[in-house]
Image (tube, rainbow, N blue to C red; front, side):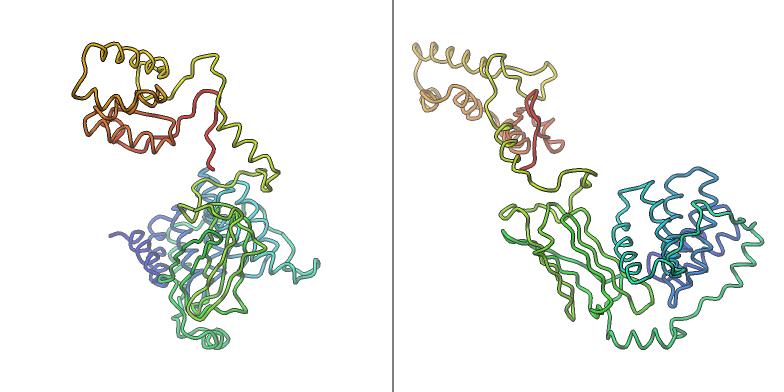
Length: 412
């Protein structure tokens, strides 16, 4: 395993001192690797105690290299690490500018919301003339990238202090908190009722006076300091559906933090805690009373002037099943006049009702097991907008909703 791979492994296992050493060795071999600087910056931030100045230096070198290469994802990663290091150095104005640049390049970056929340908490207590509020950074720093030999000299001179050498203030703060759950073992679970969604973050020793909690209509975030000197950040963004932020609460207990989120639409059951789709910018958050009208418009019967075009998996194109059902029903009746018995007795049960439903019921009753499975799966998963008898195709995956032409499927 090479030094970079060892660095990644130790960073993942929370052995940040070892991660710094391995990435230092990797940089000595390849001083142009952007990712090595980003990862070592992360490790410096999470050391106990952290080395924020070294973290900032690595982040700015990484940003310089990434900008020269024009690698968007690396620029975003380096700028984010730079912003976090600046925040930790109490250069809040500079940190805000860097977070803004990250947001311009990637609005979906999940950690932005919680960092913006933490920044607001710091800035609201500072006067506008305070040096901490001033922004002096440029989007791309003008720093020199050390050559391999120089990088080795600089980085090997940096010593990593063991956890026992933490400052007295840090030790006192840790004792006041009590035994804390390690960051790697913190987990969360959730359940719901008709009225609420309850999220439990299982973490012992969360300091109530230093925990920052933010509940919005479509997001939840919490940040609190760890005994290692770094911060633990947790966020759910976006939530599956809208909640009533004003009526929602969070409780910090000895063994966990519990969020009780009041559903904005009582009775709506969430299949997941978070949504896969981000909340669109500029989307209307308030219900203006038109949702009922939209639902009625979507569910209303369409005019029957042109023949309805039904969704289908057939390569030959859509069929007018109303027409097919009428023809088969008529044919079936003509045949039964001359021959009664066997399966015809069962088919009589479908007569006298809606001919389309009768046709499909008859088709289902005479189908083989695979065809029945295909019909049930396609109809249920597509919300009644598609019906297939081809199990070899339907069995490959989920059947998507396929509304008729001119209509749009809405998640209700």
